[in-house]
Every structure is written in C-alpha cells, then in structure tokens.
Amino acid sequence: MLNDAVRQRLVKAALEARRHAYAAYSGYRVAAALLCADGRIFTGVNVENAVYPLGLCAERTAVVKAVSEGCREFRAIVVVTPNAGAPCGACRQVLWEFAPDLHVVVADAQGRIHWEASLRALLPRPFGAGDLSEVEGG
Image 1 (cartoon, rainbow, N blue to C red):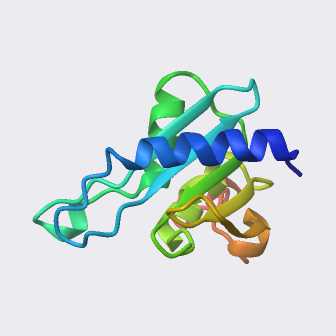
Image 2 (spheres, rainbow, N blue to C red):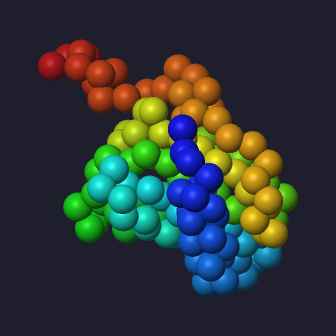
Image 3 (cartoon, rainbow, N blue to C red):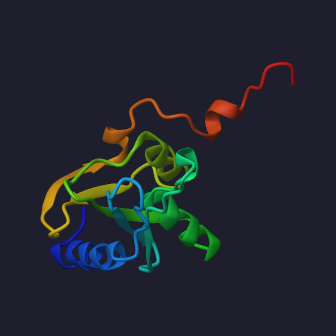
C-alpha cells in the first residue's frame, strides 16, 4: 500500500506529464507515473498516431522509459485520464511482466483518485514467463 504523501507525489507527477500527451485524434489525454523500487518516478503519456494501432499508451511509455534507464522493479503506478478510465489490457500485460504485485491508482484530470487495486485483481489469469516453459516441438 502507498502512504498519502507518495500517492499525491505520483498524482502530481502524472498531472504534470499529462500536458505533453499527444492525443491528436481521440482527445483523450492520459498520463502515468510509475514508482520504481528504488524511489525513482518515471512518467509517460499516450502518443497517438494516424495509423491508430501504432499509438502507445501512457502506462507502456512509462515502463519503457524506466526499463531503458535500468529500473525493472516497480511498486506502484498512478494513471490519470479525463474520466478515471482503467488501464487497457495491453498495458496490464506489460506491467505484469515486471510487477505482478503492482499497486494501481486511477485518478481523473483534476487529480481526484477514483479507485485503487492490485494488478493481480485487474489481470486475472495472466500470461507470463512460466507459460513459455514448455514449448511445443522443442
């Protein structure tokens, strides 16, 4: 669980990052603030593309930034959306790769926290590295 000071620091970081979201097509600006085990915070925003499937969600942007800087252990993520929408399935799966016990906090564009949950609750029956242990024909 997060204490209130850390939770608010993450919400503030996500709100500040949200200014940089590139939501040219949907107008749905999303930001995430990812807390590493070492205390560093990495932010990410959604980056849309005219070829819609090529867009990238804020949560995955934050994960890629963190991993590229050597952080692979995460404690919590705050996601800020216009209406406190949940992380998509692809983001849940990417987060699972590094942090099955991640604490997820979702807030709206005014910084009001709407709900919190564990990643385990948000992604039942995930696919992980253990599922690759027995490959057919190998």
